[in-house]
Each structure stands twice: as C-alpha cells, then as structure tokens.
Length: 320
Ligand code: ADP
Image (cartoon, protein in one colour):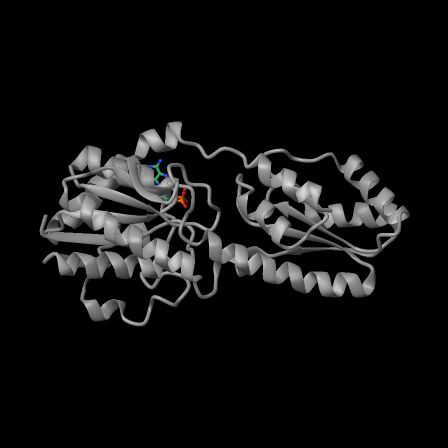
C-alpha cells in the first residue's frame, strides 16, 4: 500500500476531524501518500479528491463537524456506481480507503473491498452510539455533554415556571444518549426508543407526583418515538401545568469535541492505518472493554448489535 484515501460519510459527528487528522499524520509518518475525498461517496463519484499534507489537518483537532464534508449518496447502493467510484480511486493510484461513518457507510466500504479489491477500514463516527462492534462511537460523548447542558438550562426555567419540559434527544433507534442524559440531567422520566411508552401511564404518574407536591418535571425521549409537541398538549390538558417540548435536533451534532472523543478518534485513526499496513481489509474498528478491536464489517452489522442498556434505565428510574 502506497496511497490511501479518507472520507467521512453519513451524519457528521464531533471528533471526525480528529480522526481524519490521525489517519493523515500517522499515514504520512509511515511514508504513505494520503488523499482526502470531499463529501463522502458522492464526492468520490464526482472525483472531489485532493492530496493532503500534515498542514492540511492543522488546527482541526478542536473543531466540530468534518472539514472533508459529508453526504448521503443512496446511488452508492448501485453496483454500477460503485464500479465508477473504484475507477476514480484507481485513476489516482489510491490503494486503500478509510471510511468514517455509520453502518450504512460501513456496508458501502465492505462492498468496495469485496467487489473491487480495495482494502477498506471503517471507523465509527456518529453521535447516536448505535454502531455495532464498539462500546463507543466518535462523537457520542460530546453530544451527551451538549444534551446535558441543554437539559440543565431547561431545568432552570421549568423550575421557575412550574413547567413540564419534554426534551427530544437524538439517537434514532438507540437510546444510549437519552438514558445517559436522563441520569446526568436528573430527569424524572426517560422514554427509550427500544421500550416505547404508554401515554396514559405516563400521564397518571405525572399526575400522582404532582399531587404529592412536585411542581415541575423533565421528560427525556428518543427521537422518532412520538410527536413530542402533541404529547406536550396531551399532558398539559390533563395535568394543567404548562407543558412544552424542545427538540434538541442538530444542536447535538455540533460543537467542539470533548477530550474523550478527540482521544478516541486519534487512537482509532492511528489503528486504522496500522491495520491497512498489516493487510487487513473490510474491517471496522471499535473500542471494547477499553481495548481497540477490529471486526469483519458484515459480521459486526449482522451479529454484534449493541444491547439495550436496561441498567441505565433502571438507574434513571430509581433516582426520581
Ligand atoms: P450511516 O453511515 O451514518 O449509517 P447512511 O445509512 O445514510 O448513514 O449511509 C451513508 C452512505 O453510505 C449512504 O448515503 C450511501 O452512500 C452509503 N450506503 C448506505 N447503505 C449502503 C448499502 N447498503 N450499500 C452501499 N452503500 C451504502
């Protein structure tokens, strides 16, 4: 391997820049040439590729987002489009690829390895912490800190106005962010995507706690579970207290990456280059029990689904 390329794909996450920096600098250190592919697989297809130097990644370790840009490019599911992308890589003499993204991006990387022989390594980049084969994804810890800051602010005003606040948290089908934010934010109710909820039971619980003297409440809920603004109306109609929903949305994606995410991203980036030099391909990097690991991408996606963290929900429920 002499020339490697790197791209970021799917939703952006704080710490992706630190991962790119680590891949670029550790590859240069090993005598490889490194190319940046801008805007994910779409940019690959459009030949948006530039050679990177160690200075291309100066002053980015502390920046959120990804300076390479990211994109969704469903056309990459088409084998003919992947063939065109492989030709673009070959035209630059690129031998191998590091992909930072989620499981969709991983699948694309694995297909490039299988169909066209390009060694690809996937790094887990998403705030959702929903990627198989790793305990933590790059960006998750930063997003959690952001969510907790937002919850703390909502607590101040909810408490002053005896208001009920519903906070919608990202995570798609994974409630790690919701449950951890519930504990750190001291929220009264945590609604997890994996478990769902019974609206009538929730309202009754709120009614009974307010009857005992409680005068404000914080409810955290994973995105996609229900229409939180309608839920707020339903709670207010029954309980009487003003109820408002706040969708944290993309606020959670931005911001300066935490030290944890920068370190995780740096370690994973260096590891990815080492794996390529050892001849590994179609692998995804993870951290499990504090150790860096790598798994076959498809095996990870099919067999290493991360279990629901019932223990976190239990702690959240016991501390209200
Ligand atoms: P994530 O990588 O965060 O899971 P997506 O699922 O949107 O995000 O995938 C990001 C990109 O990866 C897609 O826009 C597409 O270009 C590529 N991709 C996703 N799924 C596949 C697939 N099954 N086969 C090939 N490429 C895929």
